[in-house]
Length: 443
Image 1 (tube, one colour):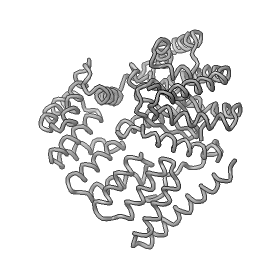
Image 2 (tube, one colour; image 1 turned 180 degrees about the vertical axis):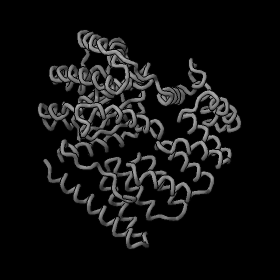
Image 3 (cartoon, one colour; image 1 turned 30 degrees about the vertical axis):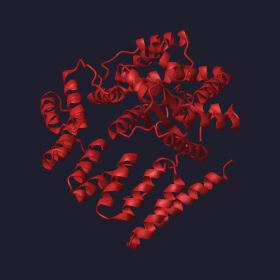
Image 4 (cartoon, helix red, strand yellow; image 1 turned 135 degrees about the horizontal axis):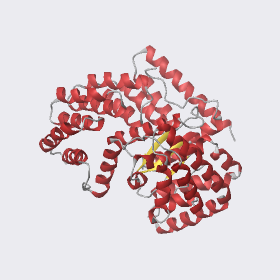
């Protein structure tokens, strides 16, 4: 299957407060509408990675980079997509997608951070808006459709059409995109340096791509020249410092993606990473006693967050809930730790404890789609259907599916016996309906 995604596309994307993007002064309502439509396209491909650790990691590193961008006030969010091609793209309202194939092809965390910095630069420099001003509505609709088709369609005929159409669209805008690729390189390199990553990461990654047949989609949408690579290398060589080493989180997520893609563990140079993957594979194969033996050895060598989360998951499966929560207690500052701690409570028939833990986190943080779906399941388990519907509505809103979210809120209204909760739900429905009406008024 040929997988093609345009590198940057101007596409259309309190305890119970709705997780809608808050209005930013730097983004127009039109951009928010297009971002909402873009989210629906992405989620409808069914390629968004379900693993909460992977999604939470990408969001964390992406938001760290955005702090050092030229416009930190810009709304940004990140999604990892299950696709073997080497690609990344920026959509409207700051939504950035990264293919699993790109993460797997990176050799260092600085290379991954370099790609994120590059895409963030497209966002902060308003390249998407400037691109749209050179593109008519018909082209926009065509490209939006191609994004979905490239990810989900397996027919040879559609592949041929996709390749020629997207290539043609890219060629029509080649002079425009080259100009902005240079600008994104320059700003992205500076962003890398300020955030503590090796600024040569971006240049090294682009240099690798020149002759990689799996990177043609990325290169088609990110025109790359010898001069551009040389310029990026020279620019990064002038920057020196004590740069960040690859985090264990980066290495473990990359190793897990490899395992799920190839159905085997990769040979790792890092002995602690090998132990991590041996424990992870045993957990995946439901060999919990073996998983425990490996994780005990792992924790003697490594005490980073992924190791504690994995230990907690293993002991939860062994029915040792108290032990599992001791490990989770060390990582409750991150969503993936809270998520698996709450799931451990659910799996061990202590659902109310899981609700208290996850609800507390989501009151203070927006949370991923996965966390809201889990909290919905927790509420179903205790028979609290009104609150289950509420968090299903929140999950749908995260996907950009606002009308479906309203339907879920309406179900919550019909099942709740709390007048206070009924009133809160009514306010959220009114908010959503107002947002939809505003979108409909736009051209």
